[in-house]
Length: 83
Image 1 (spheres, one colour):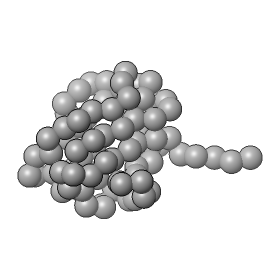
Image 2 (cartoon, rainbow, N blue to C red):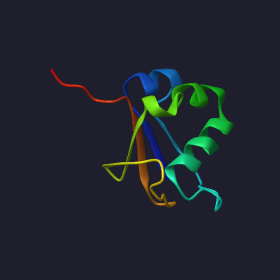
Image 3 (cartoon, rainbow, N blue to C red):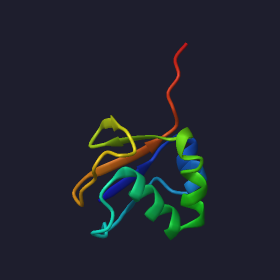
């Protein structure tokens, strides 16, 4: 799985992204966030609070209960505002 971080999420994570081997126990975006956060304190900071982060799976914005698979691209980014 390719995980990408954008804007202040990237700054808090300290990197643009990760290539990870998804464990079989991770099947949703929420479980992915929990698993990624447990792997690294900087990722935990970047993805917290979870309601301040938006998620896209394969370039489609999704909710936390959306399924994820090993070949997905998952992007984390702040909410987008317009003006």
